[in-house]
Image (cartoon, rainbow, N blue to C red; front, side, top):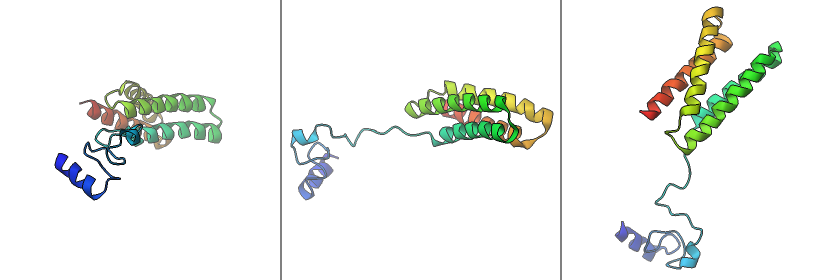
Length: 143
């Protein structure tokens, strides 16, 4: 790796210097505030969990708009917010799945019971299925 850094420094001093940093040659003043490309500087975003949070929130809003259900609105906003916060935590630390797992587990149970009673796929069966997928996904993340 050191040989490659020296080689690239000779070819293009704007790309790398001897230490592997991006910048202008070995000028340490140019490196201040520069990001070390060898370290992961950007957190991985858990798009699946954020999408799940969005689906739950939008589902609650649609339940209120179409049927006038205030309970659907409150539940959608509460569980969507919790799922969004859990997605944020998982994005920062992939092993921190407590909030996401708890939220998805509760929704799986509640909506699964509603689906069994009503037999309606939308919304209860859909949310129960998506929540079950999230529970299984999060369990596999921590294993």
